Amino acid sequence: MVICQPPIRPKNKHLQSILASSKIRLWRLRKSNPVVEQQIEQVLHNPHAKLLGFHTPQPQSADTMAILLHGWEGSSQSTYIQLLADSLYRQGMDIYRLNLRDHGDSHHMNEDLFHSCRIEEVVHAMQDIQTQFKGKQFILCGFSLGGNFALRVAARAQDAGLDFRHVYAVSPPIIPKHSMQAIHASKLYNKYFLRKWKRSLHIKHDLFPHIFDNDHWQAENNLERLTQMLIVAHTEYTSTDDYFNGYSITPEVIDAITHPTHVITAWDDPVIPFEDFSTIDRLPQIKLLTTAHGGHCGFILGLGMRSWIEDHIIEETQS
Image (cartoon, rainbow, N blue to C red):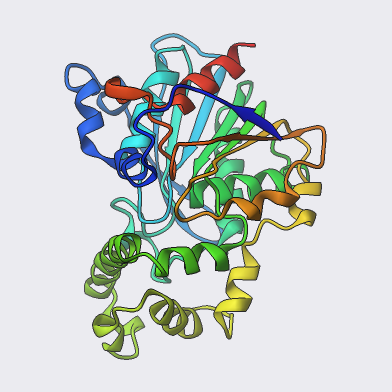
C-alpha cells in the first residue's frame, strides 16, 4: 500500500464527495470544452447490449486513448468524467467516454434493465473500441462503480484479447454489500442514490412499461428493499447476497489482473469502507494508493476545484 499526501482541501469527506459531481467545478470548462464540442457519438453493438459512447480524437493522430467509465447513475457527462477527459485531452490523448447500459441518454437502447453484474457487455465494448482503433495504446479509468467495472474488465483482459497500458480504479466498491449498507445507513447518500435511481427507472418505465410487473417499486423508499425487489424480478439472482457477490472484487479477480493497475481510495470515503481494500495490495502489478482525505471520488485540491486524480494519471502516463 502506498500512502499519498496530496494537499487535499477541504478535508470534510462529505463536501469532497459532493464536489466530485458538482457542476460548480465545470466552471473550468466555461470557455472551452473541446472533448464535448468535438465528440463523435457512437453506438456500440454487441451480442449482449447496445452501449452509447463518445469518441473525441485529437486533431492529429494520437498514440494513446483514454477510456473513461462513470459511476452508478452517472454518465459520460458527469463532472468528474468531463474534467478528467479535458485534462487528458490537453495532454494529447484521444478520449472515449463510455456509458453503461441505462446511463446517460441510452435507456431506449436496451429493454432489459441495467445491473452491476453485466460485465460481458462492457468487455465486448472494450473489444469493439480496441478493434476500431488498432495501433493505439489504451488506458482505462473508472470511478466508483465504473472503477469496479474497470477492475473486472482488467481481470478478463487477457482472455478477451484486450491490452491496457494502465488501469485506474478510483473509489471502487470492493465488497458491494458493505457499500450498500454504508449508503443505506446515511440519510444523505441513501436519498441521493434513491432519487437518481428512481429517475432512471421512471425513464425506463415510460419506454418499456410492460417489463415491470407492478408499480410497487415506485412507492419504495428503502434502497435495500428496492434493490431486492428489482434484482429478484429482473435478474437471474434470487437474493441480493448472490447479486452483490456477483460483482465483488475477490482475490481471484485481483489475481487475474496482469496489466499495471492503480486502485485509489481515501480513508474517509463515506460509502466505500476502507477495510474492504485489505486484499488488494498483493501482486506486483497492483498498487493500492490511499489518501487520508478525499471522500468518494473527490480528492479536490482547494479552491481551484481540480482533482488530484487528474494530476496523478497525467504523471503516471508521462513516466
